[in-house]
Structure formats: structure tokens, C-alpha cells
Image (tube, rainbow, N blue to C red; front, side, top):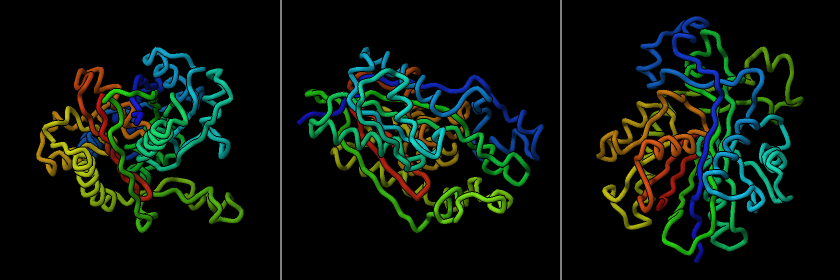
Length: 330
């Protein structure tokens, strides 16, 4: 059976860097408070000249170069995002057109912070069934333009950031590639991390009252998210280990969604490993939602934390609640 091997990765973030000190100037917060709560010192936010599709396209170009392929070799585009340029259509269509691809299939996946792993899983199935040979998977987000930058919104606005990461999946007969994927959700917690508007639960979808009430801004119950994340991350990591008859000692790096450094530390403790085995770059990039895992993969590889034949585990937890993992032999 064919496996889906990741043959190229790439990322792109906006040039604009927003430090904790910058946020101190516009809301009642401070560097120490932000670092203690999240581990973040800076994040990248778009300026007026950029949007999610631009970040996604540039990340895709970098992944294509890394894989040493041509855009026309790609058979399918999957983009994980909550923040497409338009309510519809999706970013995937913009990527397909901008890169001059053949008229291949393209669609977006909306699974919040877990969406990149969900997208890898979908791509993996297409390759295992031999429908496609080469697939572009992208995670792209612009969260900064939907944040409440007042004192009232600081708990969320200090966390989120913008960026995009991409991976090329290619069919292989070798032992390298995606070994397994594991997807979960529990809609019971839908409103603990959500954005109500615009959506069809409101008719009309967007009104002045909706805007005045802030229903178009994200809401997060931080305590509920933390409690569930530190439970689900270890569960789904262990699920990937068990499915492949691996132990934690077989893993070069665990690369989790960069939600919060406190969550990553708690996961490391529950897994019985040090932070040298649980990758974290939230300090410099913040929480980029669906883009955080591919950005982190690029960063970890650049730092030499894994290489050919190493096994890594990607794990995520996000709105829905959703959570997911994948074991990959590089």
C-alpha cells in the first residue's frame, strides 16, 4: 500500500512584529503577565497589505521549492483555515489559481486548531487509495483583524497571531511517511471556544446589534480549554504511539499545536518527558491556529531536532472541541 510522505515544507509570516511592549501601549496588560499566562513575547500580525491568502500562497511556494517539484505536479489542494479572505469561496481556490496549477480539486477544512492534522489525514487517505499522487496541504490564518484590542478583550488578543505553513504529500512505496492519523471531537464544548457571527444562527447574519454586542469577536473560556487540552493532548499522542507499537523513546519530537506554553509544559509532564522533546516556538510566533503546526515543523527541522528516518508526532487541540494526532516517519 502507498504511504503519504512529506517531501517538502515551508512557511510564511507577516513582516510586522508586535511585541508585548507594543500591546502595553494599547491595552491594560504587561509583558510579565502575558509571558506568565502564555509564554509569548511577540507575534506576527498582518498590515493593510496582507491577508490569509497571500500568506498561504507564499508558504505553498516555499514548500514546493523544498520538495523540488513543480506546481503542476500537484493533484489536489487542501487548506486548513478559519479566516479565509472571503466568507466564500475558500483560500484553496486562490492558491490553485495564483500558483498556475492545472484545474485540480481544491477545498478548505474548518476544524480550528486541529485543522492541519485533519487535512493531512484527508490527504493521506487520497494517497493510500491511489486517487492522487501529490497533494498540497496548507494551514493559514489571519486572526489579528478579528481581535478586540480593548482591555476587555486582552485575554484573547494577546494570544493570537497570523501566519501560514504548508506541506507537500507524495505517494511512496518506502517505509517513510504518515504512519497513522487520529481524529476526535466533542461538540458538547462548542461554545467554550467559538465565534458566533456571522453565521446562519442569526437572521440576518450580521447586523449593527450583533456588532455592538461583539458577537463577531472570538470568545474563549480559558479554564475549560486548558482543562480539556491537558487531558486530550496526552490521550491522542498515546493513541498514535499505541497504533504503531511505539514508545515515547522512539519519538524524536512531539510537535503540538502552539496554543499556550503552559499547556505544552503540562503535556510534557503528563507524558513523562522534558521540554526538549516537546517542541515550542509560541514565544516568537504566538498562537496561529491552523498554521501553528506546519510553522513549528519548519522551525523544528531548521533547528535540527529531527531528520530523515526520525519519527515525529504532531498533535492538536482546538475549537469544537476537536483534537487530533499523527505519527510520521520523516
